[in-house]
Image (cartoon, rainbow over all chains, first blue to last red; front, side, top):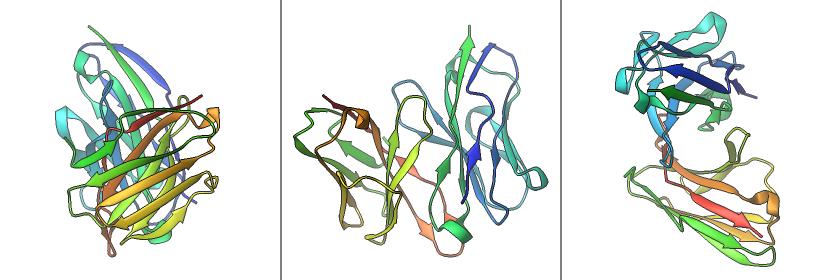
Length: 115
Length: 116
């Protein structure tokens, strides 16, 4: 079974600081990888996704993520955060060869950016 | 606006009530999902429908009963729920491709359910 773990439950940082959120998954086969964000009171929306090709993926709002297959990781980064990045961030994995279209989420990381 | 609409947005129900949650997607997707989002717990996948066929039932109690009459509509029928079932219920849809799995899921705004 596929599982996803996010190492930090809460992150607090100041504006202009750099952000890195960890994500590890357990499945060893082919995976599709996603980062979703949920701003306060809003729906989950996609930040970026990886299917194949360049392991460094760029998403919206200056976010990027790097897929390291050997480490089963897909960490999210942003060089300089803004107050508007305050949200909850979810990593998700679709191990589609084994689990069909089932999308498994990590526990989420709440990020608070202080102005 | 994500193309996935859920109604109602908020629902308060007693433990003996019967209610239904509705989800509609306008994206032409072939797969739809119900997720449960509780405080301090990961998003839990409840049900998956692919081409209107239920392909996943993640050990969900029978007091939750899904229905997918067509590829655009998904319901979650609720009956004799418990207070611990109070949560945000999210519907999502995606285009499932046989050769590369789930492209990405689009989520609705959710129904905030409170069981009293």
